[in-house]
Length: 296
Image (cartoon, rainbow, N blue to C red; front, side, top):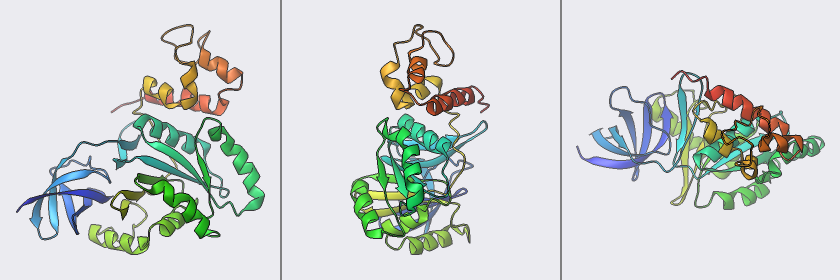
């Protein structure tokens, strides 16, 4: 049967759903390979009317993934931007937000922070103050209320999505699914169809899926997660992924400075003077430690 090309729109285990033209094909990979990500452009070989084997993955522009000591988990390929969804309540994790920002910087993906539930007025000032750490280093923050003010939410976010391939990530409880349902007409119906095609039953929250908004724009919804390991980033990649370190790199006393405890370190001086937030530098230390622990 003839070959085809398509975009991976959902993944569950080693089963993939691929949009090839007007058709959705159920696909598997050859052998035990599972290195296919949602958003990948793949070459297929059809095996029946609605099934195919993924023969190869076309070159990726970007790849977002997280990793722990033992393995890595692909989130999505060919992204241009990342929406990190936080909320006034429940409390969000600064660690997760900062790690997602580092992953985006390292992967060449433009990050945006979306603050949802701004209608919870009593918690808004404190949340804005916490997010100030990111505003000061130039990350855009967009304030919305998906449930209480859907029109304003759409007006704020839709122009940002145009012409982009965007992934939404966030911990559970931040209102990510409310945002998806608002931004993607028929999202629930599409998810049910995908779930049936992948035979994932009730596990509709455990797989990543891509929705096409128009021929230039797509949005990817990923399962909520609490951990964002970055064991795959080397020390050199890490120092460049902290945007606020940039002006200070190359000004340390020692050319091979690790920015941890060395005398005459320009980055540590910037932490002391308040130019770099201590919380961000502490994360950098933690990530450097993690990157030295790799086993795979």
